[in-house]
Amino acid sequence: MILQKDPRLRKEIQEWGCYLMSIFWFVNKFTNLPVSPDIINGIYDKLLLAGYINEECEILNPQAIFEFLKMPVIYHDRHDPPDYKCQRNEFEILEWRYDGIRHFVAGNGQGVVTYDPMGCSRTVRYGKLHSKRIFKLLETIGC
Image (tube, rainbow, N blue to C red; front, side, top):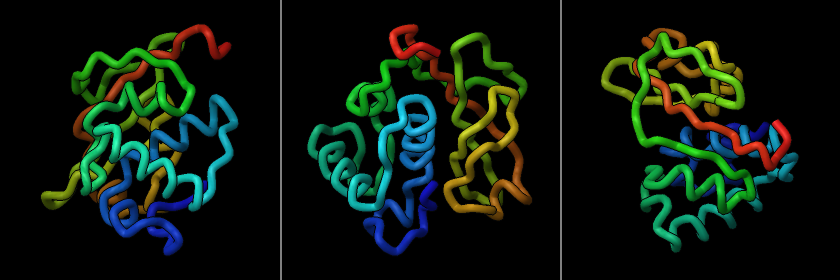
């Protein structure tokens, strides 16, 4: 998977795109959506225009982003505790914190990092798992 700091990505993604890149990772995993810097940059522009992200790549509507990428999910817009264990058909995006920095990564459902958009971030290495964003896959994609 492409890392957030890839110089072919827009600066906004390189700077603040960890949550967005985690979404792309899951969409690629579950739907085989092709992912390249050009595709990511093009989708970024569409998401910004639709109001699903802001200019600093802050995720404003994660469920709408997944749906835009043809991966229907249910998201309850809450921050679950670090000890939450995903149930059947759920997956997690983890929020880590270290030294005032927030960083989002993909998890395995049990709080273990499976994809770090930075590769090996200081926030994950030295920080603490703060919360989880839990998404439920809809049965229509066969998971």
